[in-house]
Length: 458
Image 1: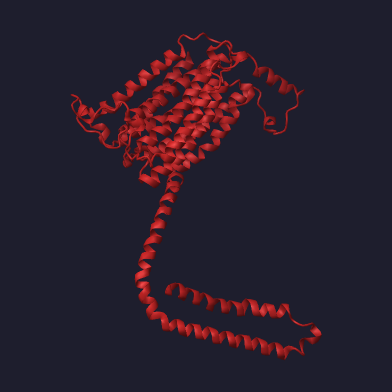
Image 2: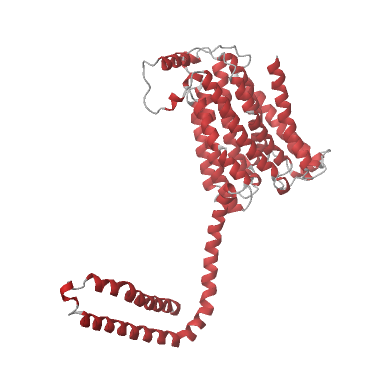
């Protein structure tokens, strides 16, 4: 209370000085008499101003004297009050700083800058890809657009990770797996959309046989992930709680009894469900690259093969993430995170260029940027509209979606078990070997590039 009284008195004293300087003088000018009476009233005005100043000095002197008298007791009270106040203030500041760190960690480091810069070229890519003359399958186009929700989903998950667990998203399995699941859904939508357009003879006239079901499921997944982000910590999920409760994980005793196992798993090792999500994303993306390559024949436009080449850096970006997890996310291999972000920026740029080339080949011009309604009698517009409804060159499907899904599931789960427990037989994953990590990141995409290079020559 004494501290509050001291502050109040100091404020009043300062206010008196301000009143003298800023209020009394301007007020006397504002309410000054006409010029004809100015000389006659000058002595009276001077007397009033002198009286005001004298009175203000008297009041201020009295308050300062009383304040000086109270200083010893105020200081004694402050010695016990200030530490408690300071502790509360620092606690509040610490909480605010923690939330600030959640944002700055994502945005101000090198990886964050690369990821942010990658958004603009991706928006250009979506714009060119959606050009009606391209005949891009609706569900496949929606899949590419859905990727934006995956990007958006990594923001709250990253904030929860930093502010609650003070860790990186890669080490918080239940959030990591949930965010990555949105990327898997993206790739599934792309594959379903392009594959159906290539194999369904009724697609052009009747539309997708799936209807809106895939889109509804995708939207429900986004809602479920948002609910998990907002309630997961309150439900008791901890920093290393496994995604989907770790279904499929082998008990630790069973793992250590395997004849080939030489090491125990680090606590931040990915769970089987999270590894399965990663492998599924990689396999589906490779499948999407293959389908888009073939889509060039479906549309009789070889420019679509350029999009497959444009997707290659994005494939390498995914390999970067898996390699980082293979080595159990060590800080010494942080360059993999930054390389992943750079490859994402590069990949978004190359797919934007590829989509631009596709759009140009199908009649896109700068006139398409005009936001006003197009002329219904424009020769260019009529030609584009006619091309947009041309039927695809359909190829009969050798396998149904269910058979392909079963094969993908078996391959994904098998790969997850082999990698998760198989790497425990080697020293390499625990060595944090940057050379080996770089070889993996460069080797797998290089093999993919060599495959398409030879395919293109044929």
